[in-house]
Amino acid sequence: MSFWQLTIQELKAIFADKSIMMTVFGGVIFYAILYPLPYLHQVPTDQQLVVVDHDQSSVSRQLIRHADASAKIQVVASVGSIENAKDWIETGKAHGLLVIPAGFRRDLLLGRAVTLSYGGDASYFLVYSAVVEGLIAAGLDESQQVQRLGLLAKGVSAQSASRQLDVVKLNSIPVFNPSLGYTPYIVPGLFLLILHQTLLIGTCVLGASQWKATGYWQQSTPIALLCSRMTAFALLYTLLTSFYVGYCYYWYDVSLQATLGSVALLLLPFLIATTAAGIALSCLFTRRDLPTQVLLLLSMPILFVSGFVWPTALIPQPVVLLSQVFPAVPAIMGMLELNQMGASWQSIMPKWLQLWALAAVYLGLAYWGLKTRLLMAANQGKKAQ
Image (cartoon, rainbow, N blue to C red; front, side, top):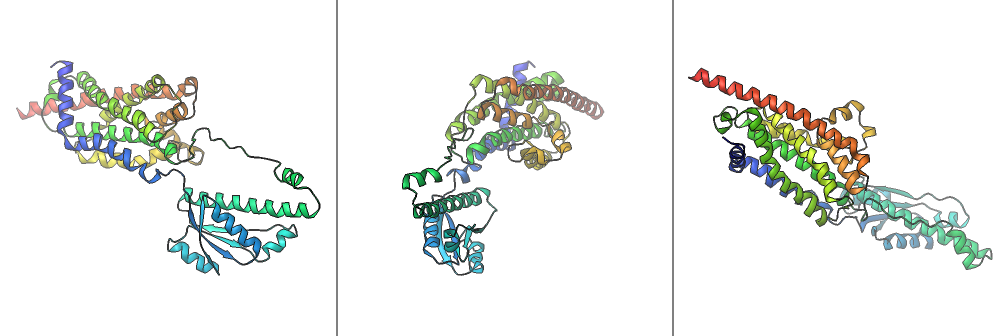
């Protein structure tokens, strides 16, 4: 059987297996919609806030109006106690509470420090940070207004007072995430992890379903079977990777700073290493259901140790070192640095070389595993005769 005939047989086996098709095509397309869906609005706005005003002064009411005018906050109620405010948060009618202390107006006019208390549901970091950001902006604006009144009362001109209060102006320009949203932050790394996991599961399920059966794979050599299987999955995942890195990146407004050639050059060893790793792992299983169970358990650990959702400095060093055996880890950080941060090719060269090293190791393991499995199948066939 020639190489291309064997490759065609591999493609037929893939398309004939419903589990593999559901994992490879269904998983890639399904997760392309599912994961970014909750974050399509990018930045949280109009988060519900309940206020406990112990001062009941004109200044405290002005502060509440400033907070409500913020795009981040919507004041939904003013209650008499913190216990009542907690009930609003626990029932989901509000995400946070603002407590204005008694003597708020008096202390501000006397130039004393005033502490505004905030409490809220920190289960959703973006929601929590949006409310805090809105309250800080409202508090600073109110403080400036009081200070301006104090300067004017001392006889300082309006222009001079404005200059004294606006000594430093913040010009914040986001570099790597222009929209400041969650989707451009999480999608690039997450999509590579999805490609990594579905490719591993697909190759493992295909191999695990064949070792105890008879078929075309027994009529080939280990090297021919390895090359044809890698070619078959490479053809499929070239299309799926182009769909993710091409169409989905543009659809979700992900920052694109690298050239097509450099991205393809980075992803080439990633796909080779992942496919070879999947073939090598498939030689360890003889049940179709086990690869999916094992590899799904590894998804979240790989996501966290890759370094873009959780700092690796807070992860035990042995765990970080162990994670380097997964092709997704250097590929994710290399893609983020190259395509989202505009890093030069020289700066990601160590990760690129690491991917090639992983590809070489897994190709050797895959060849050894296929050779062992084919020999076992041949011995069993001789015993059966």
